[in-house]
Length: 233
Image 1 (tube, rainbow, N blue to C red):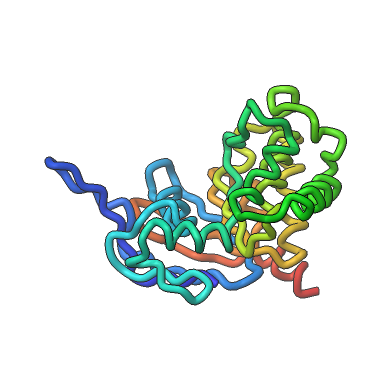
Image 2 (cartoon, helix red, strand yellow):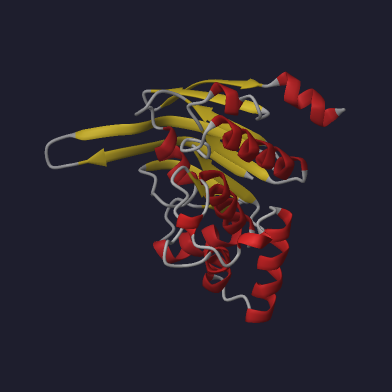
């Protein structure tokens, strides 16, 4: 599903060049739950942004669902992103002026889904995430955990092939954080491919594979055998 080979990302100014990613090689198969860990500034968020088609590569190859991304223009990347990827952010990124229903519906509008189908999809995902009773509330009227549930609903409403999660529990207390991780685990069990950036070893333990990064490079990839055994049993 995701195949990256010899990928580099360089940020350049008039005075200096900074290599954020150095010869990254990575394969993520359909249905995997993968965590990326490493210290601040190691390049993990840059890698997530490239995989999410929010940033360009400087050199190398990146194939998403069999399509080579290198050389695509912004319109092509946007079309591929909308068809395949859902995002969950640390800061929720909900629009305060819109109620929960409208926040969840927004990606469907961008994807030109007919109004009647939008209504059904929002209703279905809200029921699935137990937020149906909050659809007319505004983000500031919700707890952090509830806001993240809305953000997850928004990420899922277009039925993406891949969920990219950037520190999804970073602004939550442990109880709400565990709730979000249990939700991601259920999505993984249903076949969703998940790639998560996290500082939390506790959160990473929910995933099948843990990738460690430092100084723009991948140091190691290891299977979380406990999780693998659960899903193979």
